[in-house]
Structures are given as structure tokens and as C-alpha cells.
Length: 118
Length: 112
Image (cartoon, rainbow over the protein chains, first blue to last red):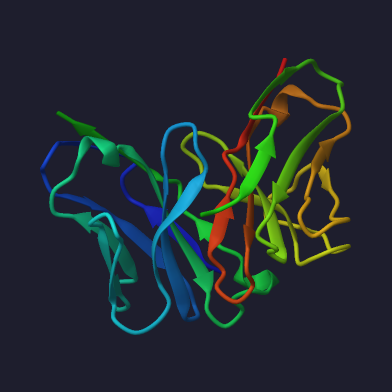
């Protein structure tokens, strides 16, 4: 079974500052990794994902995450945040071998609320 | 752009009432899901479906039930609501091949 730990429940930062949202996972098998974002009063949207290939993945709005197998981490970073990045961010993991089946359903972390202040 | 819709967005009802939360998607996705979301907690999968006439219970035990009579429709029903059912319920769908989940905006249920 997999599990996800998001180490920070809330991260306040000032606009244009860099930010890192931490995510560690636990799994006995190979995994796929995801970051989802939830803006106020909305559902979750996929921000980026690691399935295979380069361990550094990027989103269209400047976020990036790096898969670190040895540290079982998938931290999310952005070099300069905007007010509009204020949202809750969820890290999720899925069993690679059983992806698409009942064993491969996504397991989510508790979320990190990013608050960007002017 | 994702096309998955949930109604109602907000519902306040009394204990003992029967409620149905509607979820529809127009993307032709086979898999659909219901998650329960509470503040500061993980999203918990309560039901999912592989396709028409397929329903499975998720990781979190729930007194709700679901049905999948049509590909695009995956309603969730509570026969007798209780205050412990107060939560936000998120519906999602995915293509089996990619696994990316597309979420609706959620239904926030308050049971008095």
C-alpha cells in the first residue's frame, strides 16, 4: 500500500518569493506521482505528473517538481510566486503496476495551503 | 477543458432526509469516482466505477450508495442523512489509459 505525507499544512509567502511544497511518499512498488491544485470553491485540477522519463517535470504556469527515488520525495517548487497561486496543493501517488485498476487508485496527501501575500 | 458537473453545489438539510448528489461528465470517460474531502484531511475515495453497471467501494467506508446506469452519470445517494455525513463530496472521472483525474467543483453537504 502507498501513503503520502505533505509535511506542511500551511505555507505563507510573499509575492515574488520562491516556494517549495514538500511531499514524501511511501511505497513498496514503483509509483506514478502527481500534484493537483484546488483553488477556492473549485474542484481539483492536475498541475503536473511524473510517469516516466525525466525526473524533473514542469507545469505551464511555472511550477516544477522533481522525482527523487532515493529520498522518496516529489517536492513542488516555484521560483517566484504570484497572488494567483494562492490555493491548496495536493500530492498524490499511484501504484505503477496496477495503474488503471482497483489497486492503482490515487492516494492523496492532506494538502498544503499556499497563501501568497502582497 | 474538463466537462464534469456536480449538483447541487451546496445543500443544507435536516437529519433523516434522503439526498442524491448528481455527477455527470461529457468526456466519455470509463472510470468515475466519489471522494470525500474534509478540512485538513486526505481526500478519501468512497466509491468508484469502471463503467456501466460497475460500482466498487473505496478505501473509506461510507453509508452512501452509487449507481452507474449510463456512462456519463454517477449519482451518490444517502438514504437517511446524519450530521456525520456533513462534508464536501468531489466527483471525478478519468480515462483508464492516462489515469489523470478530472474533478467537478464539489457538493458541500451540511446535515443539521
